[in-house]
Structures are given as structure tokens and as C-alpha cells.
Image (cartoon, rainbow, N blue to C red; front, side, top):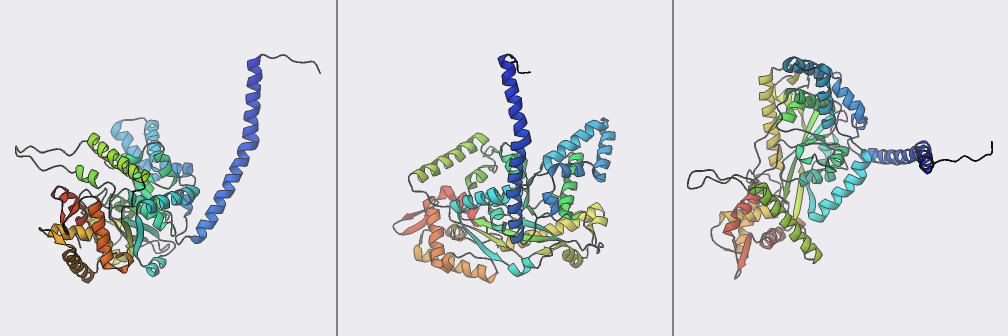
Length: 477
């Protein structure tokens, strides 16, 4: 029994590796899981007590469970059977496609990542780039929203920073779930966004089976009370103006709504959100993506190519990095977010006399949803903040000659009075209108959109498009 055993060296190393693996799986991994689960539960308890809109069980459900629920949803299975008949595919192949679509769409929400990492990161990024402000917020009406209602934040889309801004400012109320385009499906951004509750959408997909899977996920999330954030414009504003809305996602949320279901009293509540910036990070890139007017020969000119846009973006980043290293970098002015009065879908349908979208024929439902989205866009437009740069840019575009500081102040004061009378939401830093003009003028002169010559200020003709981009943000007012 006590005689030694001789083993080849490779077998000895193999035994050591197996022993280490057994120790890891039996002792270390369960301990780490217990420790992490304990910390996560503590964060969840602390966060759930502070939130105005609690985290829904659907959001906390394991991703694998949600994927299975989506795959075997009766409507999805019916669409899959139709797809099998049309394409002549084996049912197993179609089922594999459905699973791939479900895995692509369903998020993997992690509350610890959202409220610990996500909140910290969004706060750092937002506060380092902008002087971030909440302009208006009707606390009383927001607090009146029923806990059983599904809340949807609808907002204008000025910048990719919108995701960061609204998530940070709404973090005291709830955790938001965004629809994100295919541009973000890159490692590791995709994993981070998915862990923060984002679900991915193929914007231009005409695949009926994929659309059905997406529709059913949105409907399941909405009916389960998941708080969502939607950009009705469907993409970034390229010229500063509000874009024509697309009502795909809102139609998905609404089409299954039944006003006759009084047993649960479930409602969908839309909260209009207006965002504006003194400087949009992508402004030149967005303007460069607009097709140029036809040339004298009559041939349409193409927008700047991707490589040129990438070169401009890289130059912008390097320039600002150089300013930071020399301690000459300044934040990009003010960024302001306004929250409008909530709009109850149930109350809106009663007022409009539309009946239940669930029972309406498709064409009639589209008309109702188009009207709803139009009203939502009007509500968003009314709460878009009027910021210093937008006001000053608008005045320079309206004047052909150079202006003295006193003339500029008089013109901006006059415009402020007009907007006040129309009920627009002006953000005036320090409640000082002269200081607001100073802030807007300083930003424009630092960017060389406006130049000063012998005490007179005038716009730079070559930068008129950029000035108009910022003036367009309040043109609808």
C-alpha cells in the first residue's frame, strides 16, 4: 500500500490541472457566485426602494426564460408555420431562425450593471461634456402615474448622447429599455448595451418572421410594464429640424391594447421628453451626410464618403484631446432635458373615439396610430428647450449686417419675449438673460462660427449651414 507510483510528467501535470479544476468548480466558483449575488441583491433592494417606477418581474426574468417564452409564443409559432409553407423549409430550420432572432432581440438586463456601472459612467460622461440641466418636470403628474401602467418615454433625437443623458436623468425614477439599431452590434458595446436593457432592432428588415418575433417581444415587454424609451423620428436629425415620425415601435405597443379590458385596468402612459444641446458632438458629421444639391450639370452630388467623415471625426477627437492635455479644453455648453405632462393611451383613445386598437382593421389602426404619434410629436416639440446657442444663432441668421453687442442683446431679448408668449421653455442660465446671450455668443465665437471685428459681430458665411443647424432646433416654435 505504501509503495511509490511512478507517472510520466505529463500525467502528473494533468492530475494537477484536474484537481485545480475540481477545486475551482466545487468551492471557488460557488463562493464567488454567492458573494456577487449577495451584492446584487443589496443593490436591487436599495434601488427598488428609491425608484418611482419599480423594476418589473419581466425585466428581472432570466434571459433564457424570456427567449423560450418568445420562441414558443402562439403567434410566433403561427408565423413560423406560415414561413415554412412559403419557403418550403424544414420546421427545424425555421425554428432555429426564430431562436436566432429571439437571441438577437432579447436583452440581458443586469440591474447591478445598469445602476452601478451605467449610472456612474453616464454621470461622468454627461457632466464632463456638458453643463447638464433639467429644465421643466411636472413632479405631481409624474407621481400620479399608476404603478400598473407601462411607461414609455418618447423624445426627439438630436445626438447619440441622448441615450446617456436621459438614462442618467431618469435613473432616480426607473430603468429604461431602448431599441438600438444594428450600428451598436459590435463587441464589447453590444454586450454592455444588452446588459443595460437595450434590445436590438433591424431597422430596414422586411422579413415577416423576424418582424413577428420583434412585435411579440415589444408587446410582451409593454404588457409586463417594462419602462421603455422611444425615438419616434427613427434616427438622428441631420439638419437640426424635427424629422417626420416613424410609428413602427409605437404601433407594436398599441396594436395589442384593449380598452374593453377593465379587469386589469392596464394602461400605457407616454411621457414626452425634449432634448437640446448648445453643441451636438456629431453636428458636422450629420450635415456632411446630407446629399448636396445637384450640380450645374444637373447630376446629383453625393454626400461626403464614410472615410472622409471618419477623418473629420478623428480630427475632432484628436483636437479636443490636445486641448485637454494643455488644460485649454472647455465643456460644450449647456445640455437641457424637459419632461412634459404624461399622456394616457386609454384616455387619449376615449377622447379620440377610436375604440380598441386590438379590434380595429389594419388600415384604421394605422390612422389611429398616425394621429397618436402626431400628437406625441407635437407634445415633444413643445417641451424642447430653447438654449443660448440656438437663440443667438437664430438672430445672426436673421440679420444680414454685423451687430454690436447691444444690438445683439436687443434682438435676442425680443425673441425671448416672443417665445415666452408662445409658452416655449427657455433655459436661462443663472436666471440672467444677459449671461445667457454671453454664453451663446462665447460658444459660437470659440467655434469660429461668428467672428468679432472692431466691436462688431458677424456670422462666418462658410459656416452658415452649421448656424442654421442650431437655429433649426427651435424653428418649430
